[in-house]
Amino acid sequence: MPKKEIVKKLIEDEIARNETDPGWKGTGISISLLQFSLTSDLREKVQEQGGLYGCHTCLTHLETDKDQPWVGDHIPPTEVSWGDKKSVMSKNWDESTYLLPQCHECSHKQSAVVRDLKKGTKKYKDLNASQKNLIGFGRLRKGGYIDSSGPKVTATEGAQIQQLGVRNGCHSCGTNYPVLTYHADHSFPQEFCTHYMESVFKDLGIDYPDTFDLRPQCPRCSGHQGGKMKQIMDVATAYATENLKMVVYKF
Image 1 (spheres, rainbow, N blue to C red):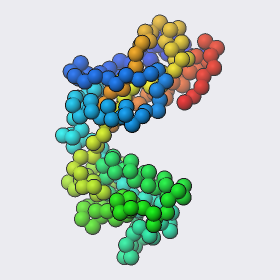
Image 2: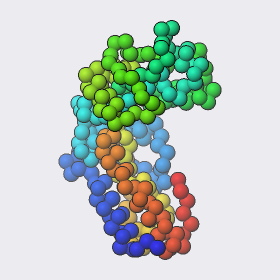
Image 3: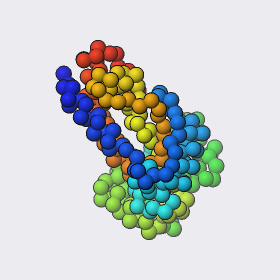
Image 4: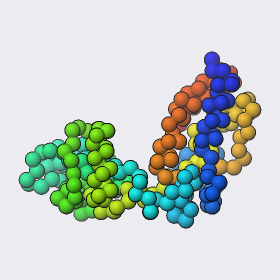
């Protein structure tokens, strides 16, 4: 059974890690306690705040910061069917797979195209020129690339991709900045925004906020922030189940 002091320390440490930099001048976007799915309007408001004031955690402005990780993009995409790969690549394709640097914006768009192809909701012939470019050669002949060793990007390949990204930009759209869109960060961790976690806080004697909001965050800070949340939630939900006799629903 999780000890009360351990659960309390884990939660308090996580809250302390998620604090907004005192120098951030922006305004959080108000949301409800259980606002897990974000609307396009909420995302746009977060981008506006990010554009004006940067990441609320480290104050980074994405449009001037090249030190954000590039995505290692497989061309052709590993999840595209063999038939579509043959349609995408040139007649001289030697059936190799390449890795190129890609910005996060193009990576998200490419994922949507690949998802449609896999589901069968779209055929390659239905894609427009921009969508075909996302899953095809793109800037392969113009920029640097490396040979891919498999469906997962290795640590060595990842380091090489970062160097190519800084030198050549995104192979799909040419931008020199890997990240142009801020993450919408729940300034009070989203995982804590449930009725059973509110009861856990009360039982542990930790203050639970009355208001909740979203703030812009860069991917680097977002990645660091999420590191221990699974461990914390496993312990906290076990505490709610065993100590408070609550039914816990995972989301």
